[in-house]
Length: 496
Ligand code: UDP
Image (spheres, helix red, strand yellow):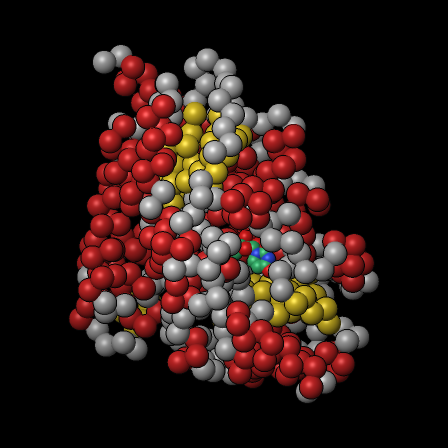
């Protein structure tokens, strides 16, 4: 255990517990930095490999004196049958081990409680991933307010809310579209596009969904990686649902200002910062399409070939982040043997592995982002003022697509029709053809009025996003409100 218990009297202390996957860890780490910038002392509960991977995002912040420390606990790999060193979803050789990883992380409850036991005063708040139901029990046991962070926006929260209340999806066929009742816009989805909590069919998942609802309703509030101006109607509606205990404090990734911080995002980049910037600098303004499908998806090589051919047919310069889990070798072989890299070398940069996404997106020659609509990626695209080609894959990504394409009108869909659950990519095979991907890329990248209007909307949102987290901006104010709400809780507790 690495502990730093030095702190100022009356300083609030947040115990931050992230879920083991980059899409959760990265924004949680950013959130920790923002809290510390607002004067809160933060302890992040982590495990050795994740501490090196994600903790290093905060190296500069800690060196500059921000009050952040780590509680490092051993993950019991052997006991749960996880290969040693695999502490995050994207490290697993097989996604079938996801549940074991999740259980291993949950087994840390006892040690976390022993740590809290010894503290005097107790932490002022536990801020944890929504799936970590045990953190709710721990919070209850020590009477500490818990704030949930599940990495979703207010639009998605409201979709889930109305789906849960109305159960409208239960009476429709897989592929029939239906309207989500009671939302500010007319949003239509099919059952096949819903998050796994609503379309898995498994009893276990249903039970988990139920426990999740209860745990969230018992929590003190929910912190949201979004900004009010992006989705004002949904933010207002969600505030009502959460009785004012929802705080939009994003975009969290904007807490990193300089290039060296933007490169450090939870994995060593597979390309040097210099090489990447040099290539981007050599392109024309807003001409490059950047294609990256998140940190965990393991799309089949046959489907990735369709993407590659679409990028080639678009005739635009592009960056493609090539990754296919344990089948990466197969797609690499195709790239090589079919001459793809050779044919496109004059206008393509292939990043084999992990891309410095924040750095790429904030470069002025990037003019479009082909994304799987994971919320972090989508919001990073919004923050950079870049229009998007949307290709949702799993979880709540189809809702995010609706927000980008229909509500904000800054995206063009490739036309994916159904969720491909994590681990079921092989069964799904090819779900989107190269021709459809190419058309969507061209619509985003072309010069016409429609595309220019879309680009302008994206740019305007990017500007507003950057203002939101500055002093006086909506997210900055919401962060102050969140901290004050927790301070009030401490005062109430101490007065008994
Ligand atoms: N990311 C990155 N480089 C990559 C792939 C992903 O930096 O090559 C980061 C990305 O910037 C984002 C996170 O990993 O912050 C992925 O989260 P998201 O919610 O977009 O998708 P997920 O990976 O959870 O599906």
